Image (cartoon, rainbow, N blue to C red):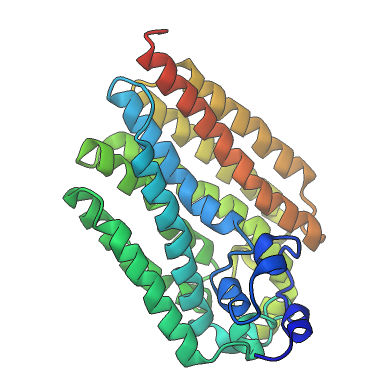
Amino acid sequence: MGTHQHIREQRPADAIPTHWTERHLPDAWLPYARLMRLERPVGWQLLLIPGLWSVTLAQIAEGGGWPDWWLLGLLFIGSVVMRGAGCVYNDIVDRDIDAKVERTRNRPLPSGQVSLQQAVAFMLALLAVGLAVLLQLKRPAQVVAVASLALVAIYPFMKRVTFWPQLFLGLTFNWAALVGWVAVRGRLEWPALLLYTAGVFWTLAYDTIYAHQDREDDLIAGVKSTALRLGAATHRWLVGFFATTVLFLALAGWSAAAGPFWYAGVLAAAVHAAWQVRTLDIDDARCCLKLFRANRDFGLLVFAGALIDSVARGMGLY
C-alpha cells in the first residue's frame, strides 16, 4: 500500500481532505473508504433523499405522524453501502478510462492502491451488507428493490453509447422513492411514481452540473455526457429539468393529499434551484462541484416540508 504520506498524496481530486475518513482511518483501510466514496458523502445523501421523501409522504397518506425511524435507518444504511458497492462496480468497469481523466486518475484502482481482485472482494462484502438490509424489509419492498439491480448493472456503460448517461443515473439513483413508498404502503401507487419522476429530472439537473467538470477529459477519453451534449445551452436545459422536478414534486403531494407544509418545502427547493441556475458557471469546475453538492440542501428542504406536514397532520393541525 505504500507509506502513510504516499497514500495521503494519492487522494482523489474531488475528495474532501477534512473528512474524518481522510484524517483518521488507518492506511490499510483508506483506499477502500475511497473506493466506496465515504469521503464524499453527498453521493449517498442524494441516493437516500428520495427515500426520505417517499417514506414521509407515504406517512402523510397514512394519516400523518412521525415516519418509521427504523425504516429510515434501514434506508440510510442501504444507501451508504449500496452507493459504495455501485461506486466500486463503476470503478471496476471504468478503471482504464479513469486512468486518463485528471479528476479520477488517483482513484484506488487506476492508481494501484488496490488490485482488481481486492476491489471485487470488497464489492461482494458490501453487497452482502446490502442483502442483510434488504431482508429486513417487507416482501413487496424487497421485490421492488431487487428490480433496481438491472439499472445498476448497465449504468456504467451508458456513457460509452449515449450523451444521456445522466438519465440512466436518474433512473437508478432515485429507486428509493419506490422502495420507501412500498415499504410503508405495501404497493406502488401514483405518488411514488410521481416522486420517482421528480427525482429523475432532479438527477438530470445536478449530474449535468457535475459533468461540466470533466468536459475536456471526457473528450480525450471518448465518453459522453449531457454536459457535452448541451454545452452552452446548459442553463436553459437546467431551468427545464428543475422546473419539471418541482412540478412532479407538487403533483406527488397533490396525489397523496399532502398539506401546506409539503408545498412550502417544494417552494423553498424551487428557490434553491433558481439560485443554482443563476450562480452556475459551467467553465468553473469549483463552482460546478459546489453547486452539485448543494443539491443535498435542495433535497433536504423538500424532506423538511414533508416531515413538518406529516407531524402537523398527525397532531390534527389541519
